[in-house]
Image 1 (tube, rainbow, N blue to C red):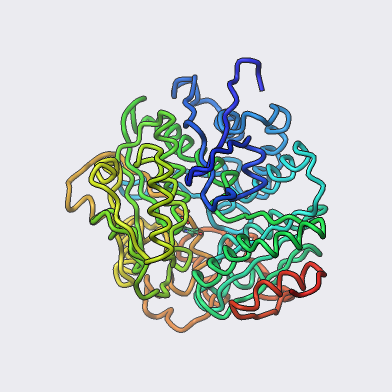
Image 2: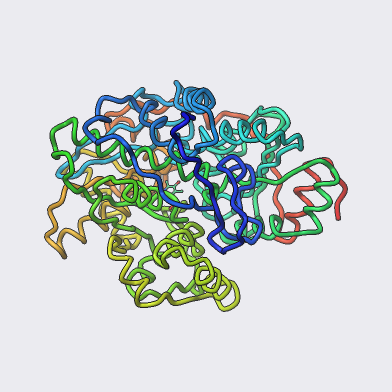
Length: 503
Ligand SMILES: *Cc1c(COP(=O)(O)O)cnc(C)c1O
């Protein structure tokens, strides 16, 4: 970048001394010691918020990304940004901020797969291939991903047809919506591989983690000139692009005159793996005036319990809900928050993560709990989620998807309990078209029992919005991927899909 830019390095939350460049962190995905890469220090902006108001989404993205990815040239970054946020999004605003009732919805679902994962996964493949070229990495890159539904389709869309790269997606047989499943199994592209797992998301995720830490396999792949990388939200190349839209939301509020420069806002984030909300926390560290982060969970309320007690305990029943992308018991990115609130103490972080592995739970110290004051944990039951959808429709003519509804429900509970009247942004993570049966039956019981594709035109009618292009005709698309396997078979399935011998 410019000669004045100090280069920013990344290190593991679990303490191995080795520091790496952003390109290395992106290419590697996860640190060798099993920790997550974090920037040595969160960069701050050298411009005032009012200076940023006139920037387009892409210009804003460049401003933020250039602070984190200091080893990328200006031309490289601009090229990645241009190709990522193009007409694959149905609006040049990229992430429109819509007022409904007394809150603002930051709509992050205008990309090709209709969920917020597109915000990062439309640029990650470009950052990754740019990193590979920069580092002269000639091995074939294999993207291995577990998905609760939205990551899979967004990653397939982003990585399809990229040279010298294969993408393998594992999704749980139970829990994903019909539209999500259809989006994945109809994905074209010779380099795409989609497999459903007999189990839930955590089974898929832990299976993938196991493959990543399998030394024997790593050696075998290396001999065959193959390297594994991840598109999961632990990749720093996914986290950093998500910081951008928190700034964007704030600047839109400034532009509308809804707030004055410097005024704090609250944000509510429907949370699963803790990647989205963590990006907001990084935005705050960069200087964005955010007051509270309302972390919204569904019935899998492991994070709610954590914020309330300081104890993280994954040992509980896994609930399949109508907000499947949040059905998670091991919230991977929380490790980065643990690291931050421990005062960047990697030994402490490693200790807690080891405990989680061994016993299924850990408790943070009193000092760490004090550092969590920015967060408020809430949750919504299935009934509350459905009521929230109905309420927003009846009172504000706004149709939310089931994940956004969890956030909205937590927000209304929070306001009732605290009377906090800070301007609030609800991070809207998916289009209601992706979850039509749950959305429509929440609004009116007469829609119960109807399928996704029957309800989509009716949803269009009542919400007075056009059917998004990505779901039009999806029902009739050809299914290319039909493989089903067990957790134990995952490793061999990977090898088989790469044309390598089974181990
Ligand atoms: C992935 C996802 C979430 C959860 O985001 P995290 O970054 O994992 O916390 C919420 N809503 C939708 C629609 C998603 O796809």
